Image 1 (cartoon, rainbow, N blue to C red):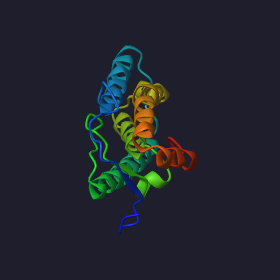
Image 2: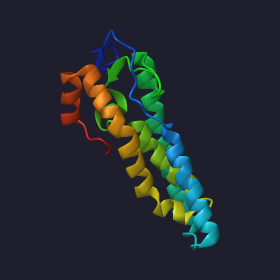
Image 3: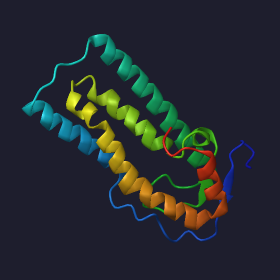
Image 4: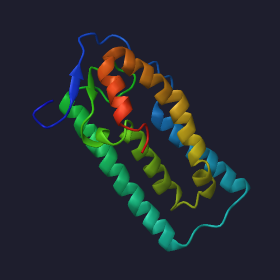
Length: 165
Protein backbone atom coordinates (compact mmCIF):
# COMPACT_ATOMS: atom_id res chain seq x y z
CA UNK A 1 0.00 0.00 0.00
CA UNK A 2 1.46 3.35 -1.00
CA UNK A 3 1.44 6.48 1.16
CA UNK A 4 -1.71 7.82 -0.56
CA UNK A 5 -3.73 4.65 0.13
CA UNK A 6 -3.28 3.17 -3.34
CA UNK A 7 -2.75 -0.57 -3.40
CA UNK A 8 -0.03 -1.20 -5.94
CA UNK A 9 1.85 -4.31 -6.98
CA UNK A 10 4.95 -3.77 -9.03
CA UNK A 11 6.62 -6.11 -11.46
CA UNK A 12 10.15 -5.94 -12.84
CA UNK A 13 9.41 -7.23 -16.34
CA UNK A 14 7.91 -4.48 -18.48
CA UNK A 15 8.31 -5.94 -21.96
CA UNK A 16 4.93 -7.17 -23.14
CA UNK A 17 1.61 -5.43 -23.65
CA UNK A 18 -1.99 -6.60 -23.72
CA UNK A 19 -2.02 -6.76 -27.52
CA UNK A 20 -4.90 -4.37 -28.00
CA UNK A 21 -5.11 -3.49 -31.68
CA UNK A 22 -7.46 -0.49 -31.70
CA UNK A 23 -7.24 2.43 -29.26
CA UNK A 24 -10.27 2.13 -26.93
CA UNK A 25 -11.59 5.67 -27.61
CA UNK A 26 -12.02 4.72 -31.28
CA UNK A 27 -14.81 2.28 -30.37
CA UNK A 28 -16.75 5.15 -28.84
CA UNK A 29 -16.00 7.47 -31.76
CA UNK A 30 -17.11 4.77 -34.21
CA UNK A 31 -20.39 4.38 -32.32
CA UNK A 32 -21.02 8.11 -32.51
CA UNK A 33 -20.23 8.18 -36.23
CA UNK A 34 -22.48 5.20 -37.00
CA UNK A 35 -25.19 6.82 -34.88
CA UNK A 36 -24.76 10.05 -36.85
CA UNK A 37 -25.13 8.17 -40.13
CA UNK A 38 -28.24 6.34 -38.94
CA UNK A 39 -29.68 9.61 -37.64
CA UNK A 40 -29.27 11.14 -41.11
CA UNK A 41 -30.97 8.17 -42.77
CA UNK A 42 -33.65 7.44 -40.16
CA UNK A 43 -34.08 10.44 -37.83
CA UNK A 44 -35.55 9.97 -34.38
CA UNK A 45 -37.09 12.82 -32.39
CA UNK A 46 -34.86 14.39 -29.76
CA UNK A 47 -35.74 14.07 -26.09
CA UNK A 48 -37.03 17.10 -24.19
CA UNK A 49 -34.44 19.79 -23.39
CA UNK A 50 -34.42 18.94 -19.68
CA UNK A 51 -33.42 15.33 -20.48
CA UNK A 52 -30.59 16.57 -22.70
CA UNK A 53 -29.37 19.06 -20.08
CA UNK A 54 -29.51 16.48 -17.29
CA UNK A 55 -27.83 13.81 -19.43
CA UNK A 56 -25.03 16.13 -20.53
CA UNK A 57 -24.46 17.40 -16.99
CA UNK A 58 -24.37 13.92 -15.45
CA UNK A 59 -22.36 12.48 -18.33
CA UNK A 60 -19.65 15.14 -18.30
CA UNK A 61 -19.43 15.14 -14.50
CA UNK A 62 -19.12 11.34 -14.36
CA UNK A 63 -16.53 11.34 -17.15
CA UNK A 64 -14.44 14.00 -15.46
CA UNK A 65 -14.67 12.27 -12.08
CA UNK A 66 -13.90 8.76 -13.33
CA UNK A 67 -11.29 9.49 -15.96
CA UNK A 68 -9.72 12.27 -13.93
CA UNK A 69 -9.38 10.14 -10.81
CA UNK A 70 -8.12 7.18 -12.88
CA UNK A 71 -5.48 9.36 -14.53
CA UNK A 72 -4.36 10.67 -11.14
CA UNK A 73 -4.17 7.10 -9.82
CA UNK A 74 -2.07 5.99 -12.78
CA UNK A 75 0.17 9.04 -12.43
CA UNK A 76 0.78 8.37 -8.75
CA UNK A 77 1.59 4.75 -9.51
CA UNK A 78 3.88 5.83 -12.38
CA UNK A 79 2.32 3.34 -14.76
CA UNK A 80 1.25 4.22 -18.32
CA UNK A 81 -2.40 4.82 -19.22
CA UNK A 82 -1.75 3.97 -22.86
CA UNK A 83 -2.69 0.29 -23.40
CA UNK A 84 -0.01 0.02 -26.09
CA UNK A 85 2.67 0.41 -23.39
CA UNK A 86 3.55 -2.23 -20.80
CA UNK A 87 1.73 -1.96 -17.48
CA UNK A 88 4.23 -1.67 -14.64
CA UNK A 89 1.91 -1.38 -11.64
CA UNK A 90 -1.48 -2.80 -10.75
CA UNK A 91 -3.57 0.08 -9.50
CA UNK A 92 -6.47 -0.85 -7.21
CA UNK A 93 -7.12 2.45 -5.41
CA UNK A 94 -9.14 5.51 -6.36
CA UNK A 95 -11.99 4.69 -8.76
CA UNK A 96 -10.43 1.24 -9.24
CA UNK A 97 -11.91 0.31 -5.86
CA UNK A 98 -15.39 0.00 -7.37
CA UNK A 99 -14.78 -0.67 -11.08
CA UNK A 100 -11.86 -2.33 -12.83
CA UNK A 101 -12.39 -0.07 -15.86
CA UNK A 102 -13.21 3.46 -14.72
CA UNK A 103 -11.74 5.02 -17.88
CA UNK A 104 -14.04 2.98 -20.11
CA UNK A 105 -17.04 3.67 -17.87
CA UNK A 106 -16.11 7.37 -18.03
CA UNK A 107 -15.86 7.20 -21.81
CA UNK A 108 -19.36 5.68 -21.94
CA UNK A 109 -20.68 8.62 -19.90
CA UNK A 110 -18.91 11.08 -22.21
CA UNK A 111 -20.36 9.25 -25.24
CA UNK A 112 -23.88 9.84 -23.91
CA UNK A 113 -23.03 13.45 -23.07
CA UNK A 114 -21.88 14.01 -26.66
CA UNK A 115 -24.77 12.18 -28.33
CA UNK A 116 -27.57 13.99 -26.51
CA UNK A 117 -26.99 17.63 -27.51
CA UNK A 118 -26.52 16.64 -31.13
CA UNK A 119 -29.72 14.61 -31.11
CA UNK A 120 -27.90 11.37 -31.97
CA UNK A 121 -30.57 9.06 -30.62
CA UNK A 122 -29.29 6.22 -32.77
CA UNK A 123 -25.90 6.62 -31.08
CA UNK A 124 -27.66 6.21 -27.73
CA UNK A 125 -29.35 3.06 -29.01
CA UNK A 126 -25.88 1.78 -29.97
CA UNK A 127 -24.41 2.27 -26.46
CA UNK A 128 -24.79 -1.44 -25.54
CA UNK A 129 -23.06 -2.49 -28.79
CA UNK A 130 -20.18 -0.09 -28.15
CA UNK A 131 -19.77 -1.33 -24.58
CA UNK A 132 -19.90 -4.92 -25.81
CA UNK A 133 -17.18 -4.17 -28.38
CA UNK A 134 -14.94 -2.61 -25.71
CA UNK A 135 -15.65 -5.55 -23.42
CA UNK A 136 -14.81 -8.18 -26.06
CA UNK A 137 -11.99 -6.51 -28.00
CA UNK A 138 -10.24 -4.49 -25.32
CA UNK A 139 -10.99 -5.78 -21.84
CA UNK A 140 -10.91 -9.41 -22.97
CA UNK A 141 -7.27 -8.82 -24.00
CA UNK A 142 -6.32 -6.71 -20.99
CA UNK A 143 -7.53 -9.08 -18.29
CA UNK A 144 -5.47 -12.17 -19.27
CA UNK A 145 -2.45 -9.90 -19.73
CA UNK A 146 -2.87 -8.41 -16.26
CA UNK A 147 -3.48 -11.83 -14.74
CA UNK A 148 -0.30 -13.21 -16.31
CA UNK A 149 1.63 -10.12 -15.28
CA UNK A 150 0.45 -9.78 -11.66
CA UNK A 151 -0.85 -13.25 -10.81
CA UNK A 152 -2.72 -13.75 -7.55
CA UNK A 153 -2.97 -10.06 -6.61
CA UNK A 154 -4.87 -9.45 -9.87
CA UNK A 155 -7.05 -12.55 -9.45
CA UNK A 156 -7.94 -11.37 -5.94
CA UNK A 157 -8.72 -7.91 -7.30
CA UNK A 158 -11.00 -9.44 -9.98
CA UNK A 159 -12.90 -11.33 -7.29
CA UNK A 160 -13.44 -8.14 -5.25
CA UNK A 161 -14.20 -5.53 -7.94
CA UNK A 162 -16.68 -5.63 -10.83
CA UNK A 163 -15.56 -5.24 -14.42
CA UNK A 164 -17.90 -2.35 -15.19
CA UNK A 165 -20.13 -1.08 -12.34
